[in-house]
Length: 149
Image 1 (cartoon, rainbow, N blue to C red):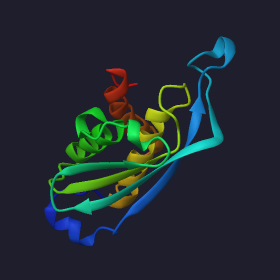
Image 2 (cartoon, rainbow, N blue to C red; image 1 turned 90 degrees about the vertical axis):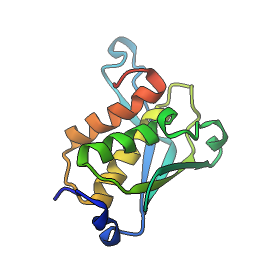
Image 3 (cartoon, one colour; image 1 turned 60 degrees about the vertical axis):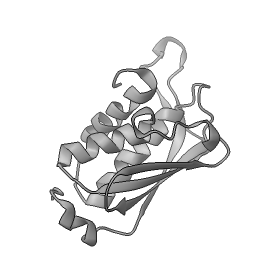
């Protein structure tokens, strides 16, 4: 099922919460090819429907370091891409509880993007495959890396 318009906001769940672990792809000769999820730190993303607009709220140990502008935040860019892909016109509130320190190679930006893609997939009951969700989250990574990856 694909969401198509504002009328659907009344039938959505009140919220969806997804936790994403820290990760690393810095594994010797397999640099950026092999990767692991690490049960050390995590980000929690909570998505709630709104009548219009996108908003980002950040808290947690490292929440202070996140951009609050939607176009500069991996979760925000992921959400924008997702909504455009579905041609959905209503908005979302995204709350990120940041437990992964940004800039230390533990997949902080990827965790926010991936958790947002999964949360939106559940919220809208779209049934996107894992590969499609990876592609959506990769768009969000452009906020931190400059290009989708």
